[in-house]
Length: 266
Image (cartoon, rainbow, N blue to C red; front, side, top):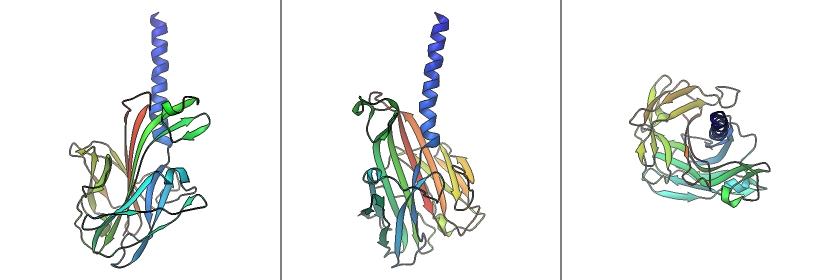
């Protein structure tokens, strides 16, 4: 009886590890590309969606179904939130054009909140209880936040906005676009309004030809703060972090996944 019990526990443990780690390791992630992260006042910039495993390459854009679930907006230097629309042509997202008319920091923010389930027939943007006729491999609640820092002018000041509408995010405490190669800056992780201990990864365009490979890895402290070094200036950078928790209602999902990416340039 004890042997049978241990066998069952072992199987359940293996299934838990499969559910917990496979989605986290292999899932695509979202980021925002900007054609010029440090434009001049009055200049128009183009914002595009990045999607995949290797920044800044996007071999296949996100599906139209996912794009429709995205909320895209701009927060200007005065804290005003400006909704943006993502045009879609032939099922593919198109560039979003925005004119920056003020000096200071603009944040372009894309947020998606939805259920997603992997089945033997593919992915569905539905919860477990909505797919009772499917063979489900795993189901999760997904919250993704992608932020692009657009710096107009040379101000080092960076004020964290209070209208991000994101459950989990990371943001620098200074404007990284004005820093020099070799300098370090701090980032802070916030999870449901409180500082959070988690890993933060950073990389820059051209660092590696391999997927899911980063130039810097660090962990935030009890204040939610971590340090990142500018290993190379003059190129575009990406910061990435994520949190996974048990989803409170197993009838709907196995886990809750929170991801955030931040991009900036010089």
